[in-house]
Length: 134
Image (cartoon, rainbow, N blue to C red; front, side, top):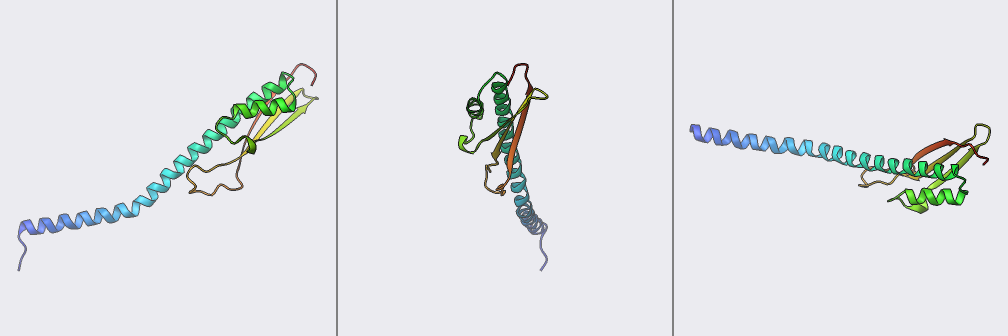
């Protein structure tokens, strides 16, 4: 028994559809991993930008004569969206070079939970020269 042209065309289309489903099933996990990676990178980059701004605000407060408690408070207020309890602030006054450096450290937080980020810390540093005595 030979198949007519219509039957052969239907069989070929059915075979093509099955092949497309298999290809999609193979590519979908890679696309999802890529999408999750892009989201995670964007989230981490956003956290670093927030930390950088907070470090700049902290060093500005320190240069204007703020105490370490005032500097930490300024950093915490500038770090919007981050857990204030996890922020670490280090203030370094180099009197020889008349330079104040503020370093802000924060543990990386995963947006999706797909990529393990335990033990990864984000760090931002800002430095400013000052003219007055420390």
